[in-house]
Structure formats: C-alpha cells, structure tokens
Length: 114
Length: 111
Image (cartoon, rainbow over all chains, first blue to last red):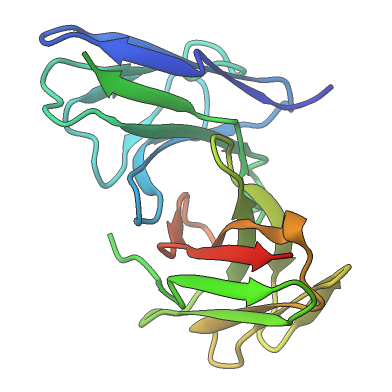
C-alpha cells in the first residue's frame, strides 16, 4: 500500500540526548514536511524539503535538524538544544510541480521527556 | 507565521444534528483544505477546494471556498458517532511550500 510511515510511534528522550524520528514515503512525492503539534494549536512547520539534498527552515526550526539523502526518506533529529521537545510530530508529503496539491500525513510520533 | 482563525474551538452535539465550522484569514489563499484527525493519528484529507466560490461535497460533508478567498466553511449533516475528532482547516498559497493551519475544532457527538 502507498503511504507515509513514521516511526517510532512513541519516543522518550533523556536530558541532553538527541533523538531521530523516521519518516518514509512510497508515494514518489518530491516534497516532504515536518510539523509539530501541541494541544489546542494548529500544526507548525519545522522543516521542509522540495527535492533530494535540499531543505528549508520552517517557522520553528531552532533545536531541530533534518537530512534528505533519498527521495523517500526525511528524518528529523530533535537535538538537546530543543528545550521543550514534548509534542506530537507529524511528517507529510505531496506531489510538487503542481503547487496546489494537498499534503498527506503520516500517523505521527509522540515524543516525551524522561 | 500566520495561522488561521478557526471556530468554534469545540462542539458537543447530539447524533443526527448538523454541524458547521469555519476558518478565516487576513490573507488570501489559492487552496483551502479540510482535514480530520483522530486521537493518536495523523490528519486525513477530507475535502480540497481550489477555486473561489467553489462548493464541494464528500458524502455528508460539504465545504465552500469563500468568494473573498479569505475564508472557508465545513458543514457536516446528520452527524454520527464516528464523526468525533478534530477538524482542521488549512490554507495554501500557489507556489508556496507550506500550509497554514487553524487550531482545530474538536467535535464530540453524543449518541
């Protein structure tokens, strides 16, 4: 089945630790996105990538890093510099080239602090 | 970045009732989208609107793209318990690479 797979579903981070969230898609989409979701708020954009080996900061990139070495993969690292990392993280992708194509989402990773 | 104003924040309704929620923005968008999110899952696309004035249905759901391009509404008719969830609106600008989201409307349906 085509889709977006995020793993793990739940992740715990210790103080001072970096953790990496996985996002894989087999939809052949060029563009991929990472969002953070906090209770009672809309989704906020962390990073996005339009093509392999290129990515751009979103609204809340500080304390996060990404890579895009393969079209189907866009991992997000939550670094120790992110002081309030507890949130639900959502990965999305869409077909680019047609600017108004909607984004489709994975099922998210919930990150908590130990 | 600018977020959208979505209302109401939450709704508690009886099964069978109709529901209406809306989203407004101070900026125009080329595309309006409505998503539904259930607990512990990612948002699922319900309806996409691409043209000002467009009215689109998906089963019991109907959404409209406002004429001013700064607003959209979503109606759900004859609600059922599985309609429970959080509904998000999103606006997208042509050529832009991200979407702006409303804070969501949490819908509870009492049987």
